[in-house]
Image (cartoon, rainbow, N blue to C red; front, side):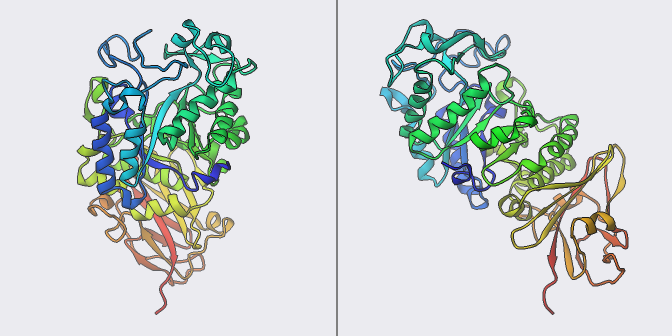
Length: 467
């Protein structure tokens, strides 16, 4: 299976972690799937992903002390394969696994995903359970010193052990029976343990052998840029950061990470900036709240993720989204860049500003200008930069993605994103042939826009309509 076969464009969906942590249940997953189908599917949002510890009992019951309860009770079959906890996922009883829930999601026209941890459950090794499809037992393929530093559930595998690949093959055969479309594998991306690199290849082989296309997402980051080729050979997404939360410093830091990974975005292969902490988040972490990002910062985050063509995974409780946030998530201009763009390119960056571009398959050009400083400033894409990147303003109309024409939600995002103070637009020769619609100022020096601190603007340069 080629990487692009199941992820021709960056995956877009919802993940339960930012709101539910380890506690999400079947009713809550269905409610978010229903909302996505009714309100977001038409814009390309399609994956519903159940995050960590869906197999565990008593999740969240000791949250003041543990995020992951050490050596807690888990649901598991006789071959050491974790199953959904039936207390939280009632349809999984009698060995049905996630098949009924996946069927529900598929019936909505959506796709279903789950989170897994690298390796094999410790309990399976301690009980010497047989490995399906082999003559060995779990203790013979587990590495007792190969453990996750932050989650107590698993042992890593010994890739050289007989039966190790058979274990992963049996896992993915089970997931294929359930109808899983997306796998997020944790404790693997940054290759903390010596076996992690080989286990990435083992996961890929298991997907190839199971007969069902599945997106493979690797977590947590930061991924190793020197391993970019290896990630691209075996996975569809790989995290370039540790968990990303709603703090400006983390968002500003992402500009450097995107710069590092910009050349490695291609069909089926996407450096992953992590989930979008928008809307209501944090409930199961003991702090249900609206995102800590200002509206200006939320627009900047969306502009960066989309010009970079990062996977888009919403972390919010979807049923609590307000109209303003829906406008962020359904902006057709930004989403057209995600769907139809090519390899992103940073044109400039310093401590105060950044400029990015992408190209649409139809020949249009996307430009995003960012003020990452702490005061209002003019950010420019100068004529030299534009010329060096074959961007001509002549005969073009410049559209602001956050104008009313492009925003699916309310047009107030435009004033939150950037204050556009001028509408005169000129090409590099000074000829005033460029039409402007809610446009930034242009001059012989290129394109300039006055932006608030942490603000940004997303532009699409299109041929002028024939008169």
